[in-house]
Length: 346
Ligand SMILES: Nc1ncnc2c1ncn2[C@@H]1O[C@H](COP(=O)(O)OP(=O)(O)OP(=O)(O)O)[C@@H](O)[C@H]1O
Ligand SMILES: [Mg+2]
Image (cartoon, rainbow, N blue to C red; front, top):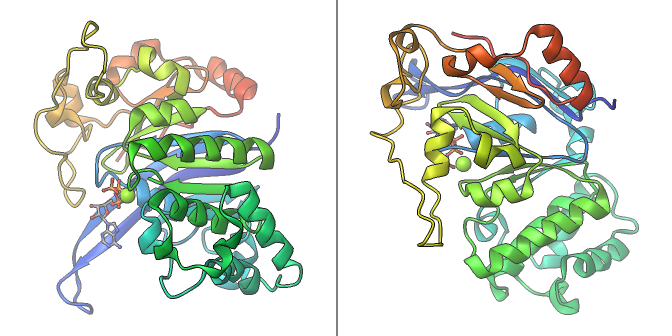
Protein backbone atom coordinates (compact mmCIF):
# COMPACT_ATOMS: atom_id res chain seq x y z
CA UNK A 1 0.00 0.00 0.00
CA UNK A 2 1.51 3.33 -1.00
CA UNK A 3 1.38 6.24 1.44
CA UNK A 4 -1.24 8.87 0.63
CA UNK A 5 -0.02 12.03 -1.10
CA UNK A 6 -2.13 14.20 1.22
CA UNK A 7 -3.11 13.53 4.81
CA UNK A 8 -5.34 16.03 6.57
CA UNK A 9 -6.14 15.72 10.27
CA UNK A 10 -8.52 17.85 12.33
CA UNK A 11 -7.89 20.82 10.06
CA UNK A 12 -9.45 24.12 11.10
CA UNK A 13 -9.32 27.48 9.38
CA UNK A 14 -11.10 30.23 11.31
CA UNK A 15 -11.12 33.79 9.99
CA UNK A 16 -11.38 36.70 12.41
CA UNK A 17 -14.26 39.11 11.83
CA UNK A 18 -13.20 42.65 12.74
CA UNK A 19 -14.59 46.11 12.56
CA UNK A 20 -11.83 47.95 10.70
CA UNK A 21 -8.48 46.41 9.88
CA UNK A 22 -6.98 46.68 13.33
CA UNK A 23 -10.05 46.16 15.52
CA UNK A 24 -10.29 43.27 17.92
CA UNK A 25 -12.06 40.23 16.44
CA UNK A 26 -15.83 40.40 17.01
CA UNK A 27 -16.07 36.75 16.22
CA UNK A 28 -14.75 34.00 14.01
CA UNK A 29 -15.91 32.49 10.74
CA UNK A 30 -15.33 28.78 11.06
CA UNK A 31 -14.74 28.27 7.35
CA UNK A 32 -13.13 24.85 7.85
CA UNK A 33 -13.93 23.31 11.20
CA UNK A 34 -12.26 19.98 11.78
CA UNK A 35 -11.84 17.88 8.67
CA UNK A 36 -9.96 14.62 8.21
CA UNK A 37 -9.20 12.86 4.95
CA UNK A 38 -6.45 11.32 2.86
CA UNK A 39 -5.89 11.67 -0.87
CA UNK A 40 -4.13 8.77 -2.55
CA UNK A 41 -1.65 9.37 -5.35
CA UNK A 42 -3.34 9.50 -8.73
CA UNK A 43 -6.87 9.76 -7.38
CA UNK A 44 -9.36 12.58 -7.72
CA UNK A 45 -11.08 13.71 -4.57
CA UNK A 46 -14.20 15.68 -5.43
CA UNK A 47 -15.38 18.30 -2.93
CA UNK A 48 -19.00 19.49 -3.08
CA UNK A 49 -21.36 21.53 -0.96
CA UNK A 50 -23.36 24.75 -0.97
CA UNK A 51 -21.81 28.17 -1.37
CA UNK A 52 -19.89 29.24 1.74
CA UNK A 53 -19.41 25.73 3.18
CA UNK A 54 -15.63 26.11 3.06
CA UNK A 55 -14.59 24.35 -0.16
CA UNK A 56 -12.23 27.06 -1.43
CA UNK A 57 -10.79 27.63 2.01
CA UNK A 58 -10.07 23.91 2.29
CA UNK A 59 -8.40 23.89 -1.13
CA UNK A 60 -6.28 26.88 -0.23
CA UNK A 61 -5.39 25.37 3.12
CA UNK A 62 -3.95 22.30 1.38
CA UNK A 63 -1.55 24.62 -0.44
CA UNK A 64 -0.83 26.70 2.66
CA UNK A 65 -2.36 29.79 1.07
CA UNK A 66 -4.37 30.62 4.20
CA UNK A 67 -3.34 30.68 7.85
CA UNK A 68 -4.13 27.36 9.48
CA UNK A 69 -5.85 27.69 12.85
CA UNK A 70 -5.39 24.10 13.94
CA UNK A 71 -4.52 20.64 12.68
CA UNK A 72 -2.20 18.95 10.29
CA UNK A 73 -1.67 18.82 6.52
CA UNK A 74 0.95 16.37 5.33
CA UNK A 75 2.14 16.37 1.74
CA UNK A 76 4.08 13.27 0.73
CA UNK A 77 4.65 12.59 4.42
CA UNK A 78 5.93 16.08 5.23
CA UNK A 79 4.05 18.32 7.66
CA UNK A 80 3.25 21.67 6.00
CA UNK A 81 1.56 23.44 8.90
CA UNK A 82 4.04 25.69 10.65
CA UNK A 83 6.70 25.49 7.91
CA UNK A 84 8.41 28.80 7.16
CA UNK A 85 7.63 30.35 3.73
CA UNK A 86 11.21 29.54 2.72
CA UNK A 87 10.64 25.84 3.37
CA UNK A 88 7.16 25.84 1.76
CA UNK A 89 8.45 27.40 -1.47
CA UNK A 90 10.19 24.37 -2.98
CA UNK A 91 7.07 22.32 -2.18
CA UNK A 92 4.87 24.83 -4.02
CA UNK A 93 6.25 23.52 -7.26
CA UNK A 94 4.70 20.19 -6.47
CA UNK A 95 1.18 21.53 -5.79
CA UNK A 96 -0.77 24.00 -7.86
CA UNK A 97 -4.14 25.70 -8.00
CA UNK A 98 -6.47 26.14 -10.98
CA UNK A 99 -8.97 28.93 -10.46
CA UNK A 100 -12.63 29.29 -11.28
CA UNK A 101 -12.41 32.40 -13.37
CA UNK A 102 -9.57 32.18 -15.84
CA UNK A 103 -10.02 35.81 -16.82
CA UNK A 104 -9.63 37.17 -13.31
CA UNK A 105 -6.65 34.95 -12.58
CA UNK A 106 -4.63 35.82 -15.72
CA UNK A 107 -2.88 39.17 -15.79
CA UNK A 108 -4.38 41.00 -18.80
CA UNK A 109 -1.12 42.88 -19.44
CA UNK A 110 0.99 39.77 -19.75
CA UNK A 111 1.36 37.75 -22.93
CA UNK A 112 0.74 34.02 -22.72
CA UNK A 113 4.51 33.56 -22.99
CA UNK A 114 5.02 35.69 -19.87
CA UNK A 115 2.17 33.99 -18.02
CA UNK A 116 3.52 30.52 -18.73
CA UNK A 117 7.16 31.49 -18.17
CA UNK A 118 6.47 32.99 -14.77
CA UNK A 119 6.47 29.71 -12.80
CA UNK A 120 9.83 28.76 -14.37
CA UNK A 121 11.30 32.17 -13.51
CA UNK A 122 9.99 32.11 -9.93
CA UNK A 123 11.58 28.73 -9.33
CA UNK A 124 14.84 29.57 -11.11
CA UNK A 125 14.21 27.13 -13.95
CA UNK A 126 14.27 29.50 -16.92
CA UNK A 127 16.77 27.43 -18.85
CA UNK A 128 14.95 25.03 -21.14
CA UNK A 129 11.64 26.74 -20.39
CA UNK A 130 11.11 27.77 -24.03
CA UNK A 131 10.94 24.16 -25.18
CA UNK A 132 8.59 23.33 -22.31
CA UNK A 133 6.30 26.19 -23.34
CA UNK A 134 5.84 24.82 -26.84
CA UNK A 135 5.21 21.39 -25.40
CA UNK A 136 2.55 22.86 -23.12
CA UNK A 137 0.71 24.56 -26.00
CA UNK A 138 0.65 21.23 -27.75
CA UNK A 139 -0.63 19.25 -24.77
CA UNK A 140 -3.25 21.87 -23.95
CA UNK A 141 -4.50 22.17 -27.53
CA UNK A 142 -3.64 25.87 -27.81
CA UNK A 143 -2.70 27.45 -31.15
CA UNK A 144 1.00 27.73 -32.03
CA UNK A 145 0.93 31.54 -32.08
CA UNK A 146 -0.68 31.73 -28.63
CA UNK A 147 2.55 32.72 -26.88
CA UNK A 148 2.64 36.23 -28.34
CA UNK A 149 -1.02 36.96 -27.59
CA UNK A 150 -2.87 38.36 -24.57
CA UNK A 151 -5.57 36.63 -22.48
CA UNK A 152 -8.41 38.78 -23.87
CA UNK A 153 -7.70 37.47 -27.36
CA UNK A 154 -8.86 34.01 -26.30
CA UNK A 155 -12.25 32.41 -25.68
CA UNK A 156 -13.27 31.41 -22.14
CA UNK A 157 -12.39 27.77 -22.75
CA UNK A 158 -8.98 28.68 -24.18
CA UNK A 159 -8.30 30.97 -21.25
CA UNK A 160 -9.02 28.12 -18.88
CA UNK A 161 -6.58 26.00 -20.92
CA UNK A 162 -3.98 28.71 -20.33
CA UNK A 163 -4.77 28.65 -16.60
CA UNK A 164 -4.35 24.88 -16.57
CA UNK A 165 -1.13 25.13 -18.60
CA UNK A 166 0.29 27.52 -16.04
CA UNK A 167 -0.70 25.17 -13.21
CA UNK A 168 0.92 22.09 -14.75
CA UNK A 169 3.97 23.87 -16.24
CA UNK A 170 6.32 22.70 -13.50
CA UNK A 171 4.92 19.18 -13.50
CA UNK A 172 3.25 19.27 -10.09
CA UNK A 173 1.96 16.16 -8.36
CA UNK A 174 -1.15 17.75 -6.87
CA UNK A 175 -3.57 20.08 -8.63
CA UNK A 176 -6.37 21.69 -6.64
CA UNK A 177 -8.99 22.80 -9.16
CA UNK A 178 -11.44 25.26 -7.60
CA UNK A 179 -14.61 25.25 -9.72
CA UNK A 180 -12.61 25.28 -12.96
CA UNK A 181 -15.75 24.82 -15.06
CA UNK A 182 -18.20 27.25 -13.47
CA UNK A 183 -17.32 30.21 -15.66
CA UNK A 184 -17.57 28.19 -18.89
CA UNK A 185 -20.39 27.40 -21.33
CA UNK A 186 -21.77 23.89 -20.92
CA UNK A 187 -20.48 22.92 -24.38
CA UNK A 188 -16.94 23.90 -23.38
CA UNK A 189 -17.10 22.25 -19.96
CA UNK A 190 -16.97 18.74 -21.43
CA UNK A 191 -13.78 19.60 -23.36
CA UNK A 192 -12.08 20.85 -20.24
CA UNK A 193 -13.22 17.77 -18.28
CA UNK A 194 -11.72 15.53 -20.96
CA UNK A 195 -8.52 17.56 -20.93
CA UNK A 196 -8.22 17.19 -17.15
CA UNK A 197 -8.78 13.42 -17.42
CA UNK A 198 -6.10 13.12 -20.14
CA UNK A 199 -3.60 15.18 -18.17
CA UNK A 200 -4.19 13.05 -15.11
CA UNK A 201 -3.60 9.86 -17.08
CA UNK A 202 -0.50 11.13 -18.90
CA UNK A 203 1.14 12.91 -15.98
CA UNK A 204 -0.05 10.85 -13.00
CA UNK A 205 -1.66 13.90 -11.42
CA UNK A 206 -3.59 13.84 -8.17
CA UNK A 207 -6.62 16.14 -8.16
CA UNK A 208 -8.71 17.80 -5.54
CA UNK A 209 -11.65 18.92 -7.64
CA UNK A 210 -13.99 21.47 -6.09
CA UNK A 211 -17.39 21.98 -7.69
CA UNK A 212 -21.05 22.73 -7.29
CA UNK A 213 -22.10 20.34 -10.03
CA UNK A 214 -22.51 16.90 -8.49
CA UNK A 215 -22.81 15.19 -11.88
CA UNK A 216 -19.39 16.40 -13.02
CA UNK A 217 -17.88 15.53 -9.66
CA UNK A 218 -19.29 12.01 -9.78
CA UNK A 219 -17.91 11.55 -13.28
CA UNK A 220 -14.41 12.81 -12.53
CA UNK A 221 -13.82 11.70 -8.97
CA UNK A 222 -12.54 8.58 -7.33
CA UNK A 223 -14.16 9.65 -4.07
CA UNK A 224 -16.37 12.55 -3.14
CA UNK A 225 -16.31 14.61 0.07
CA UNK A 226 -19.56 16.40 0.84
CA UNK A 227 -19.06 19.49 2.99
CA UNK A 228 -21.54 21.30 5.19
CA UNK A 229 -20.59 24.32 7.32
CA UNK A 230 -16.88 23.61 7.39
CA UNK A 231 -17.16 19.86 8.00
CA UNK A 232 -17.14 16.76 5.85
CA UNK A 233 -20.51 15.10 6.39
CA UNK A 234 -20.01 12.24 3.94
CA UNK A 235 -17.04 10.75 2.14
CA UNK A 236 -17.82 8.05 -0.38
CA UNK A 237 -16.51 6.37 -3.53
CA UNK A 238 -17.98 8.35 -6.42
CA UNK A 239 -19.63 5.29 -7.93
CA UNK A 240 -21.47 4.65 -4.65
CA UNK A 241 -22.74 8.16 -4.30
CA UNK A 242 -25.87 8.28 -6.43
CA UNK A 243 -27.25 4.96 -5.16
CA UNK A 244 -25.59 4.64 -1.78
CA UNK A 245 -25.50 8.13 -0.25
CA UNK A 246 -26.39 7.94 3.43
CA UNK A 247 -26.33 11.47 4.78
CA UNK A 248 -29.65 13.35 4.51
CA UNK A 249 -27.71 16.36 3.21
CA UNK A 250 -26.02 14.38 0.43
CA UNK A 251 -29.38 12.91 -0.52
CA UNK A 252 -30.91 16.35 -0.69
CA UNK A 253 -28.05 17.57 -2.89
CA UNK A 254 -28.47 14.57 -5.18
CA UNK A 255 -32.20 15.05 -5.46
CA UNK A 256 -31.61 18.66 -6.44
CA UNK A 257 -29.64 17.54 -9.52
CA UNK A 258 -31.94 18.05 -12.50
CA UNK A 259 -32.73 14.87 -14.38
CA UNK A 260 -33.19 15.54 -18.12
CA UNK A 261 -35.42 12.50 -18.78
CA UNK A 262 -39.06 13.57 -18.17
CA UNK A 263 -40.26 9.94 -18.11
CA UNK A 264 -38.00 9.33 -15.14
CA UNK A 265 -38.63 12.18 -12.73
CA UNK A 266 -36.70 12.20 -9.53
CA UNK A 267 -38.65 13.61 -6.62
CA UNK A 268 -36.93 16.82 -5.86
CA UNK A 269 -36.45 17.36 -2.18
CA UNK A 270 -36.04 21.02 -1.42
CA UNK A 271 -33.97 21.76 1.65
CA UNK A 272 -35.79 24.12 3.97
CA UNK A 273 -33.90 27.31 4.71
CA UNK A 274 -30.41 28.56 4.02
CA UNK A 275 -27.25 27.15 5.54
CA UNK A 276 -26.69 28.84 8.92
CA UNK A 277 -23.84 31.31 9.34
CA UNK A 278 -20.42 29.74 9.87
CA UNK A 279 -19.93 32.43 12.53
CA UNK A 280 -22.49 30.80 14.79
CA UNK A 281 -23.06 27.22 13.63
CA UNK A 282 -25.92 25.40 15.40
CA UNK A 283 -25.01 23.13 18.29
CA UNK A 284 -25.15 19.36 17.91
CA UNK A 285 -25.15 18.25 14.28
CA UNK A 286 -24.79 21.47 12.30
CA UNK A 287 -27.30 20.17 9.74
CA UNK A 288 -30.08 19.41 12.26
CA UNK A 289 -32.16 22.60 11.73
CA UNK A 290 -32.63 21.65 8.05
CA UNK A 291 -32.69 17.89 8.40
CA UNK A 292 -36.00 16.11 7.78
CA UNK A 293 -34.83 13.21 9.96
CA UNK A 294 -33.34 15.11 12.91
CA UNK A 295 -33.97 13.75 16.39
CA UNK A 296 -33.46 15.18 19.86
CA UNK A 297 -29.96 13.69 19.96
CA UNK A 298 -28.95 15.60 16.79
CA UNK A 299 -29.68 18.86 18.60
CA UNK A 300 -27.34 17.94 21.43
CA UNK A 301 -24.51 15.87 19.95
CA UNK A 302 -22.28 16.21 16.93
CA UNK A 303 -21.99 12.87 15.08
CA UNK A 304 -18.50 11.59 14.24
CA UNK A 305 -17.75 10.20 10.77
CA UNK A 306 -18.87 6.58 10.98
CA UNK A 307 -17.09 4.23 8.54
CA UNK A 308 -19.87 2.20 6.89
CA UNK A 309 -18.02 0.54 4.00
CA UNK A 310 -14.66 0.61 2.26
CA UNK A 311 -13.81 4.26 1.68
CA UNK A 312 -17.27 5.36 2.80
CA UNK A 313 -17.93 7.31 6.00
CA UNK A 314 -20.97 9.26 7.14
CA UNK A 315 -21.33 11.84 9.90
CA UNK A 316 -24.90 10.99 10.83
CA UNK A 317 -26.39 9.09 13.76
CA UNK A 318 -28.64 7.27 11.29
CA UNK A 319 -25.52 5.44 10.09
CA UNK A 320 -24.32 4.57 13.58
CA UNK A 321 -25.97 1.15 13.57
CA UNK A 322 -24.14 0.19 10.35
CA UNK A 323 -20.79 1.55 11.46
CA UNK A 324 -18.00 -0.96 11.09
CA UNK A 325 -16.10 -1.93 14.22
CA UNK A 326 -12.64 -0.45 14.53
CA UNK A 327 -10.93 -3.72 13.47
CA UNK A 328 -13.11 -4.04 10.39
CA UNK A 329 -12.59 -0.38 9.59
CA UNK A 330 -8.82 -0.53 9.87
CA UNK A 331 -8.57 -3.68 7.77
CA UNK A 332 -10.64 -1.94 5.12
CA UNK A 333 -8.47 1.12 5.44
CA UNK A 334 -5.48 -1.12 4.84
CA UNK A 335 -7.16 -2.47 1.72
CA UNK A 336 -8.09 0.84 0.19
CA UNK A 337 -5.68 3.15 1.94
CA UNK A 338 -8.23 5.91 1.82
CA UNK A 339 -10.55 5.48 4.77
CA UNK A 340 -11.10 8.67 6.73
CA UNK A 341 -10.48 8.95 10.43
CA UNK A 342 -13.49 10.01 12.44
CA UNK A 343 -13.58 13.76 12.84
CA UNK A 344 -13.49 15.08 16.36
CA UNK A 345 -16.78 16.51 17.56
CA UNK A 346 -17.07 19.98 19.04
N1 LIG B 1 -10.35 35.70 3.86
C1 LIG B 1 -11.51 35.55 4.50
N2 LIG B 1 -11.84 36.31 5.58
C2 LIG B 1 -12.99 36.13 6.24
N3 LIG B 1 -13.92 35.20 5.90
C3 LIG B 1 -13.67 34.42 4.83
C4 LIG B 1 -12.45 34.54 4.07
N4 LIG B 1 -12.47 33.63 3.07
C5 LIG B 1 -13.64 32.96 3.20
N5 LIG B 1 -14.36 33.45 4.25
C6 LIG B 1 -15.66 32.93 4.72
O1 LIG B 1 -15.50 31.56 4.99
C7 LIG B 1 -16.66 30.81 4.62
C8 LIG B 1 -16.25 29.76 3.61
O2 LIG B 1 -15.87 30.40 2.40
P1 LIG B 1 -15.35 29.62 1.12
O3 LIG B 1 -15.00 30.63 0.10
O4 LIG B 1 -14.31 28.65 1.53
O5 LIG B 1 -16.67 28.81 0.70
P2 LIG B 1 -16.97 28.02 -0.65
O6 LIG B 1 -17.57 26.71 -0.24
O7 LIG B 1 -15.77 27.99 -1.52
O8 LIG B 1 -18.12 28.90 -1.31
P3 LIG B 1 -18.45 29.12 -2.90
O9 LIG B 1 -19.15 27.87 -3.34
O10 LIG B 1 -19.34 30.30 -2.89
O11 LIG B 1 -17.16 29.36 -3.61
C9 LIG B 1 -17.64 31.84 4.08
O12 LIG B 1 -18.50 32.20 5.12
C10 LIG B 1 -16.76 33.01 3.68
O13 LIG B 1 -17.46 34.22 3.77
MG1 LIG C 1 -15.35 28.72 -3.43
